[in-house]
Length: 576
Image (cartoon, rainbow, N blue to C red; front, side, top):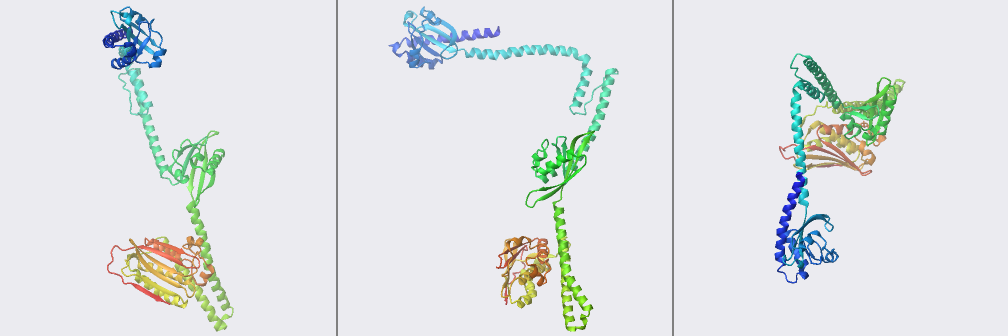
């Protein structure tokens, strides 16, 4: 009823407004000469001014002008003589009608008045507006009516609820407490409020909640402890359900296999893209016994993972599996290094020992009677004994450096002094081999932070190698230059050089590019390894460049001292 009344009120107000506007239009049109020829022009102008559809209709019903139609539309427009509002206007009174417009496809309010009330036969002017305001008002009022009805229902319901609340208050309080406990708020409690059966039930509920809170707190502590333990483990841990999908995975598992979060709910193959991992999991789920597998991960270098898996069973069924993964790459590498080291040491020791034993047996078997040959044998025994001594000393030296047991006295050191010391030691050997040994240290070169004796040992080892592997007539150069906050020392030779495939291994223990030549020269195969570890211990770097048959360049870079106490003199010496 309110909606219909509102509609009626809006329609009446709109009709009154249209009547005023239509009379204004009549006043304007009555002063237009030749209205029939200019009807459409004035219809468009009036339509814009009054914000309504304006139609000018001749006495015979023809549409002379319409603010919503163009010229073609006017020609196609139907005759309006039979429209009820037009019929009323032709009789000299305002006509009004409400209907759906075929042209605009919406419900319209039409109001027509005669152009000349004294002579209705002159024609009619009609104004029309859509009744969207009515629809909007109805749409606005309808929610208000519904809300009012609902509010009335709620008020009535609330009154009934208040009336029924008093006898059920304590039961509702218990329901509330039970709901909060079920939602995880373990501190909720019910208030007994009496000594009857309901109060006893409330007290029982409170006791149950206290016990449940205590046990859940214990479980939470254990869960946090387990999570902390799993997160701190370097081994990867994986817990899977009966379908082989991940339930729990610790961070170490993701690091080992390169798996990205989230992992829960995914199969191991989806998470890690390692087929061997998926096969190990499936084997563990199907096997009644624990499964141990070794998984090789691709890459350069590759990695080796030892997997220990076991199914989790309940009754006669398998409900999941647990897996632990150990990265044993370093262990395998160390084992390989150990095997190679033992083999190399055994070989290096066997050669001189065999020679010593052979010559000693020869001497014991009568060789002492020939004094000339006995002296030669003793010299050979002494040479091999010296080789054994040098090997053992180098092994002990390398072990001390690798285990950081070597005592280094770090202090500012002049490179020129160290180079001169190394040159003095190696000069006789270079002269014996007819080599040119040149030292070129510029003046004012910063001091380096290093252990003086150990740096000398490094240069001596590098020069010793350069001299050994440079043929007669060749050249060995020692130079140095400042490089920012560091000093670079270079040892360059014109020797046989190092093949490209061997450069990456020359700093390994007992590694020789030319084994037969190195043994003839009396080398132990540990000099470069010792040099590398000593340079690293002094916070420096060592590099090598080489061209086969064109020589090699060893480059040692050490940090420069913060300040130079005195300018160091230049050293340029060449010995041939």
